[in-house]
Length: 157
Ligand code: HEC
Image (tube, rainbow, N blue to C red; front, side):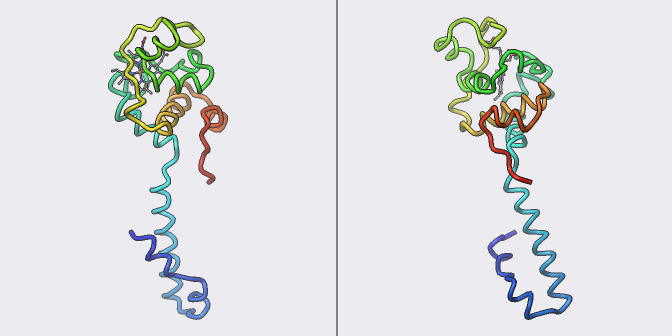
């Protein structure tokens, strides 16, 4: 729907025309406007879920259980800090190795290769969102703290 059209309903109109039909129209318009707003302002976890489904699930499993890539249930032990997790996903195996050497994460996992760089495929916001999604959904970390750790502002509800 067209939100601009809905903005045509103003408070003065509400005061001057008191017919019940007009009130119903106003309520419906407000409900539709709220519904549209909900769609366009998708939360960061939903954005991350979308990225995950498009790009990560083929290798990491559709529930983070692993496949060609490792399972993601303990990724918070590998990357205690969200920033490092974001850096890994941004660079991928090869560029990580060039920048930081042959191991990654707090558990010093050997870089075996095969994780593609996401830097040219997604925006920084989308990468942060998919990392947030992995940490909350698969590693089971609490949403608000994790969002703060990842530098993400959650929409007010
Ligand atoms: C082509 C397969 C593939 C795709 C696509 C892929 N990954 Fe990976 N991923 C891997 C492999 C393989 C590793 C292990 C890399 C290594 O040892 O160098 C890995 C490692 C990881 C790790 C470290 C996990 C751990 O516990 O060691 C994270 C986090 C991760 N990937 C996130 C993602 C995200 C997020 C996406 C999507 C944006 C993604 N991956 C897409 C194959 C993939």
